[in-house]
Length: 92
Image (cartoon, rainbow, N blue to C red; front, side, top):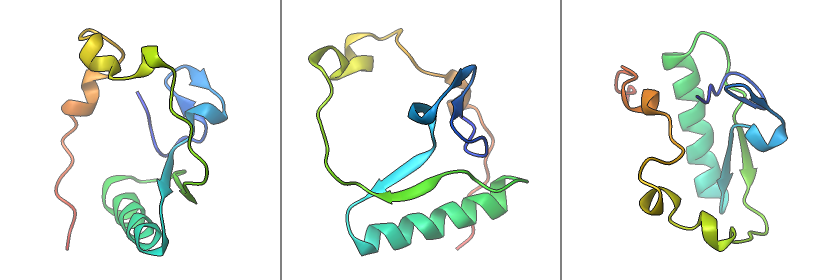
């Protein structure tokens, strides 16, 4: 399970490839992402988020076997705990 307050970690896996990040295209997306992460940090967590908001930069498509992964592997890699967390709605 991913915890956005823990830097470079997802469950037992550690490394920069497990970092919490939002990649944006342009100033408007960047501003919105910063506002939402600040609100989530204050309203849902007791410690600050380690999530970084970064420009998207160059993009590479994943290998074919990664495409539509959960559709092609219905019992594939997912964490059901994400669907049962009781987060309240964010304030306006």
